Length: 94
Image (cartoon, rainbow, N blue to C red; front, side, top):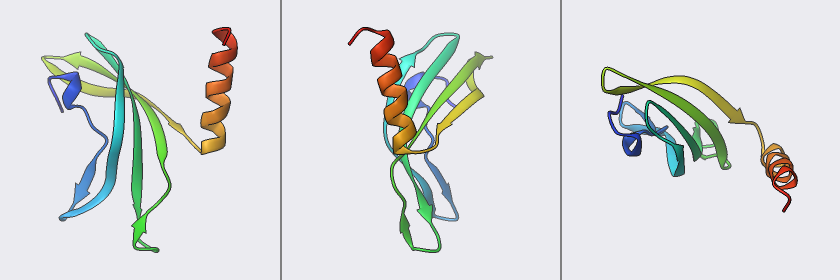
């Protein structure tokens, strides 16, 4: 794991093949606990290409100088992401 929130990632590679490619991330908070939202794509072995954009929110706790994953919420679709955005904008009065 990482000791700096900026170094946290969802990117994953196995046997030289990139299986999860991180496209972007936004650090929502950092300190003893870090919250990060990621935009990423996963390799679709059957199609031989990366799938559609996906999103996940991850929480990490810093222990002994290293961030340890604690919680995650995967946004299951673009439609769900848009509903989350609409709900938050509604609550924020926008």
